[in-house]
Amino acid sequence: MKKLLVLLGVVAVGLVVYNYATTGTVALVPPSMSMSADERAVADLEERFADARRSFAQAGRGAGLTGMDTTGDADAAMRSVQTISNDLHELQKRLSSQPAKQKAETLAASIESYQRELR
Image (cartoon, rainbow, N blue to C red):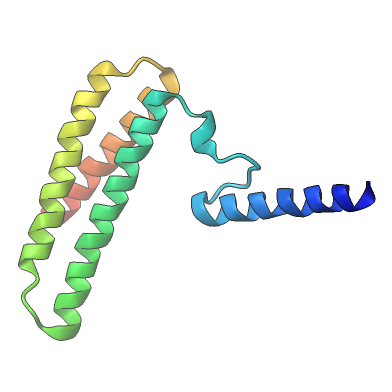
């Protein structure tokens, strides 16, 4: 019985560590499991936006380090940000839960700020 409790404790700690490493939150169950469909849709757009920002930054670093022309990569990242913005605008029309609406508004403000920063 004692070994079983120790095993369960080790598994629980492993899950918490895994969730922290993958999502950045300390939880036994991933936060995506407790999200509504609206919140998951907004979280997906947040992740796509973060990926686009990383792609744009990577294009800038590549150009700075190697001197290669990476305008195509940067342009693709900016088109991706615009697509995400359009998708978010469409999603905001359908959102029903208040937490999802708040997250969507925050994301829209982040996207707008990022686009203004790059102009």
